[in-house]
Image (tube, rainbow, N blue to C red; front, side, top):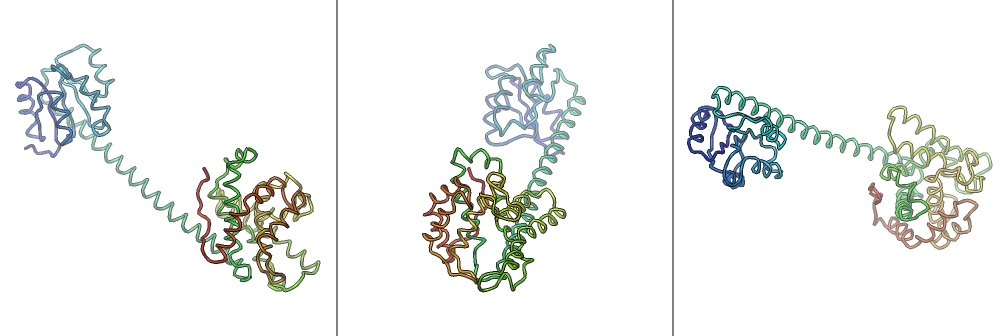
Length: 371
């Protein structure tokens, strides 16, 4: 056994060449002599070498045919192959290199030269393996760190959203339900000729995350207004409407700290625009029709529907059927007509979500890509 743990397969149909090669190599490497290309392929099914010395001219499966089979197999393709040949034709040497050999040594070979070339190729292979392992480990490390950051991000988003809801316990699970309604609507829109192209460019995961923050501006609304039982005065209502601008400002400030986050772009749009109305009578900027971003038009329907079926300090909860009728009646005035029709067509799924969340039988929408 050689002093080096590297295993070398020496493949040649000539027993004299096999013995001569083994005598040169065995003091440094673990050498396995193999008499044919066919026998090499059989041996490789059981054990893999660090390098193969392969004769070109052999009966049956010659060296070129053998290396073709080696490189066609993902298990053996990475093994470096050095051709040993009595040919001196440069075209033959070029062919061998084109087929995937790392070197081409003429016979009779110089023992010191053979040893040095093997040493260099084994070192190169070792470095390549180390680089691959490093890259694999780096990819895994990045994946783990990304998962940690994503988990923290999601936790902070949910925490911020729950801070808004905590101030008004009677709206419990509003944000969760709205997010689920949006997910149902998105799935239907992805199958619609009208909307499929536009939403295909969205980061659906980021969009659904952002829905949790659509009311974040309410953090800056005083309790006596936010929790008031009964109708707001004109001044109080004007103050309440400011939550759309407050949400935009809060999210813009957050974007300065953590730029290039897609979910913050969506969140800002939803927080700022979800109270705009199709007929231009909404707030804060009286946008009209398609001037209102599609995401905000979707949120407007989901948000109002859930407000209608929820109990609030100033009103009793309506039934699903009553809430849906108001959505229908607001088609073309408050809401985008086409989105309204689509939302109504999903009535059964919407009702299932609203009832499941009220009973505590569902969780926050999963952030997955819609196919």
